[in-house]
Image 1 (tube, helix red, strand yellow):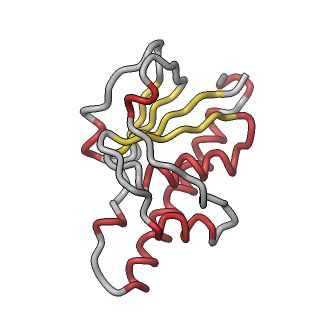
Image 2: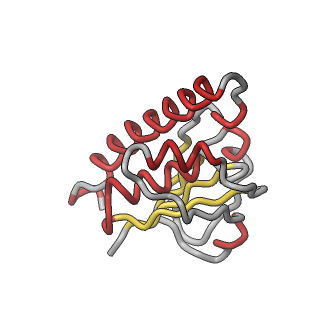
Length: 143
């Protein structure tokens, strides 16, 4: 049985999309990864680019609202932005909740290269955090 994980964020355009795709890429079928936003926006093109650069195809990713998951059970809910941490709705069951606060790369202003570097830095931070989390959660005694 797969471990169900939801990554809520504000816009579901950058950090939560990265977390969803990175978890799916690193853990495969052991986890069912989802993401959603409180106010979904179009996925930032730099999100797709940053993921593609590490071999993750996110070309068909779609932004979703949290309401699209009403009534569903998740084993873990991991917020990735500070604004959603305290305002995330509840879901059925005893979901374990964590907060992984990451800088919003979409809010960064600068040259295209500087923006790209910021997206890549956040992507790499999410990847490192996800690898460690998988190692802890995916142990036989951790299920």
